[in-house]
Structures are given as structure tokens and as C-alpha cells.
Length: 113
Image 1 (cartoon, one colour):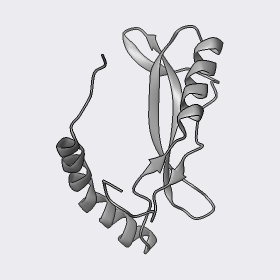
Image 2 (cartoon, one colour):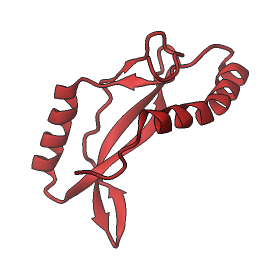
Image 3 (cartoon, one colour):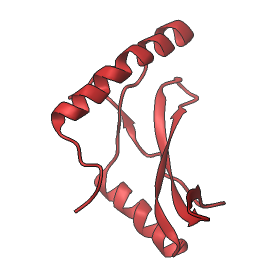
């Protein structure tokens, strides 16, 4: 059991709500369509979490940041492990992150692909 599970309808609503923001950022700033999703290999995700837990026994979760690839400027996400500190979830200083994801096909494809 886990928290945060959403239905395909809820996923579609989140995608639609982001679309207007994405379009403004993408077309007005970069002038080209941007990436809308990032796919991660299951083994990479499991390996990242397993390694982070081994290295940081106090790990309590993962924070996902938005980023941009410097080569093509496409949006991406990267993840870092977190720990609890005074009731807050803080990034673990110096911990390795994960950014092995691939862009959507095509990059600007909406949900579902």
C-alpha cells in the first residue's frame, strides 16, 4: 500500500492543467516544443533507491527536481534522496542523484503516450 496513487483520469487532468504553462514556457522562451515526460528504466530506479538507502540509512524519500539538458535544452527531471530534519524532508547533502531518464517520444507528446 502506498500514498498518492492516482487514476488515469486524474493523471490526464494533471497533464491538461500543465499544458498551458508548458506551452508558454516552451514556445515563448525557447521557441521550440519542449519535453513533456521522462522515462526511467525500472532497474535504474531500483538501483538508485537501493544504493541511496545503503549509503544513507536515514533516507526517508526522494525529491524530484525539474531541470534542463544543456545539449538540447529539453526539460528533464532528476532525483535526490531525502532525510527527515526537524520535521522537514531535506535533501541529503552530498548524496548522489539520478538522471538516467529518456525524453518522451516525441518529446512534446502529452499523456498518455
